Image 1 (tube, rainbow, N blue to C red):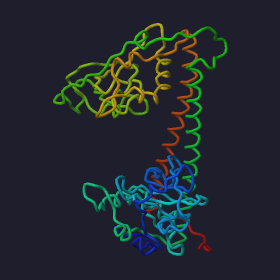
Image 2: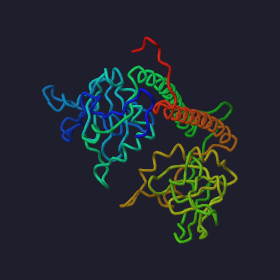
Image 3: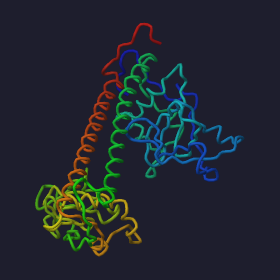
Length: 401
């Protein structure tokens, strides 16, 4: 470990903790639709140190169970994923309620007179320390960390008052990030509700009447299924056309090619609608490139009677439904016939324009919120790099303790 700031010590986790343990494999017998929370690796995130209620499972555990007593969580417990996705960090918040963990998580409970849980959680989630934690894989190719490795993991620790101050500062940023996440989630829910109403005719915009027409996609759009070029013609020197192979070449609803090809098979134009047709099926984007499309991508071009932005929003509304038509024993896929038979409901062109305008504005609001959230996360990350290494010291009041 690099030279520490004045007053900081290098300590192992076992020197500052009361408990370092993990859960058991034998939880399936206790699964229930309701009851006590059962925290798993999927409830820990890479962003921040909160324990998410998303995808939470529940258990109904006998009061006398020794397993339950051993892995019962308390406020302030630090959680670490120790299999598969190593080093995901969580911090059990106040008021979380009775909860338990399985064998994929380690529980570290601090001695409060030695270490501040929030500080340690932030430290373990910081880029540098998390990279070191991931580098201590005890299981070779199959990722895994032993409890003994966690107990002997060395961390830089400032005096307790400084830990508290740093934790308080970073927690303020976490609250700001959480508020932004809620605003974003709310905007996304509102956009989804708008799509379900406006794109089905259940809600009409002022001034529009008349019936909508039921059409197959092939009747109103040209569908081009991709075809993968030979790999020996790939390059990263920008020679030929960008290659869009699948969902990996889509980012933030726009094409984001990683490589080029000189063996051009099928192509898309700037502004064309892109659809991922192999796992995951149904992801929708707009092409920002004149590009070659591989077999994981379909390109959709509208005719003059229909608006591309309206068709794009219609496909966004259908995005979650593609699993019902996916097929294939090895991976999910949608065929060209499946795609061309897709049913759309189309109003007149003026109404399409009005609906697309409303939904596009909602997308723009979501994009701004995502940008603000990304900025907050980056600023917090930079601050963590300063505070958690002692490069930037905080001012401690004389009576702090």
